Amino acid sequence: MLTHRFKSKPKNNSFFSSIARPSAAARSSTVARAAPQPADSRRAVLGGLVAGVAGLLSVGSANAIDLFDDRKARERGFDIIYEARDLDLPQATRDGLTQARSSIPAAIARIKESESRIDGKLPGFVEKKYWTLAREELRGQVGTLRFDINAVAESLGKDGKKALLGKKADFLKAADTLDFAIRKKDPVKAAAALEATRSTLDAAIAALG
Image (cartoon, rainbow, N blue to C red; front, side, top):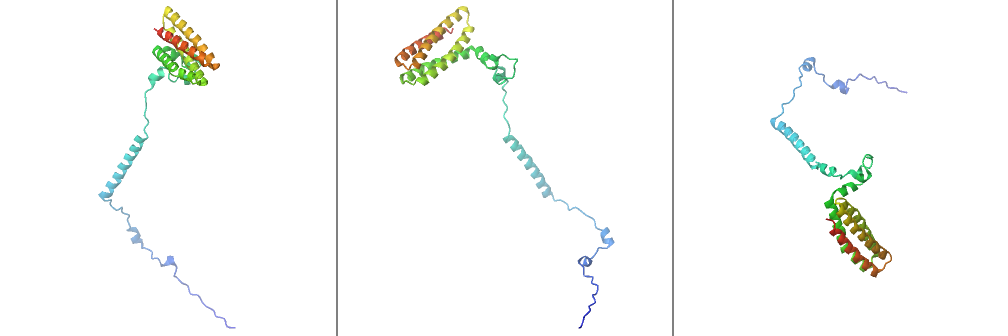
């Protein structure tokens, strides 16, 4: 049996060994130098910065919030109704009733608005026998008129107040008769009570002063 013995010779073909190493003089003479920036590239960088700032400013202006001065509205009690936890204020003030009574021109305007609704809507509802609509419209306007007529009466003198409250009582009596006729769904009595309601309301408005 033949055996072959091979003697391996040391090889020096390593990748790292094949890389030439620089000499100490070459290493010591290597100096890192920054390449000079041309003027065009500096202008480009500055231009980009300016464009970025302008973009931020435009976004800020697009998202700007408009501020309104509502101090006068708040002084008139605009948001008092939302201050339910302020127990130092009277309940009527927190509900806005005090503010509503304090403006007599606004109260008179609401009285005339209620008159126009009674004159304009109730006759059609009664004639067409829309009893539910007639009842809701009448009760809503009577509630407003009772409140506003009382507010106006408080601003009048003794005689004027007495006369206005008397006219208001006549109106409320006629309106109560109309409400009963509507609940009974009686078109004849409802029509007659409606005329009495309108005439007594006209007398009350004439006594506003």
